Image 1 (cartoon, one colour):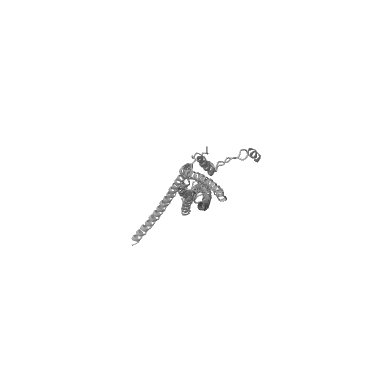
Image 2 (image 1 turned 90 degrees about the horizontal axis):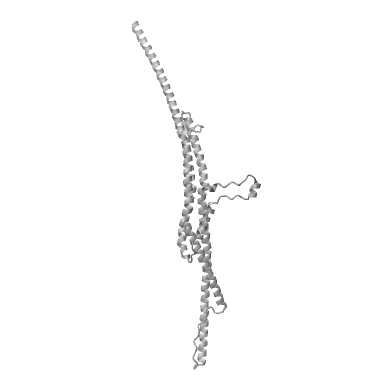
Length: 346
């Protein structure tokens, strides 16, 4: 029974038992986890053993090959998407960092400078830096497991089918070679047989002319494959043609089975990949949520700083207004005193 396909363990090879080189040498090399290529290969090969024997499937090769070429394009699209996805996420995190850096630049020297661009663990810039680093680690994990699985899957299936297609083409050319050769030999044999037939007929005619009263016996047609070098060569090549045909048809049947397996049962190789991708997304979202909750503390501290700065500013404005009021009152008093003195003098 083939191994159960899993993606999660592929990037975590088991540690060798013991700590020293001598112990490791004595125990022999530690067997690592199977690669996706190995596991997929084992599944497909095990499935092919259960296929019933089939013959004369060469006529199915053309439509199946056309379908496989469509599948090949899907493999390439999946492989490209798997490599592009973590890069796209990384670019998004870099854009987030640029945004926060712009916030920090504008906040320099302000009451909220420390909460945005400060060096504390809960500053917006520090939390964002942690998110970028965390995303980098998740991206590397994605590339080592999910993207690698996609690459190995495409590589194994396409290389295996391509190898059998190439071999089948050679066998077909080998079969065509003997088919054409036998056709040529058969024509030569027919020409030789016709020549021999005419020769025998002429002999019979000559014998009948020499003995007109004797009843002529009918001329028997020549035997198939007369015991001549040409006949022997034809029989030998007909045997080779029959062998080449059987080998080609067996190859065609095996190739048809392989393409049908990867096209119709490929979902068995897709399923663990999708499951691991879902688990990766859950782990990434959970870790990201845990970090982004620190933004709440950042916001709370920033609000406190804004309240303190606002209160301080309001106090400063109140003191300023009070001072201005005092100055105005003093000026009014001086003006009133001056007016009174002028009146009394008059």
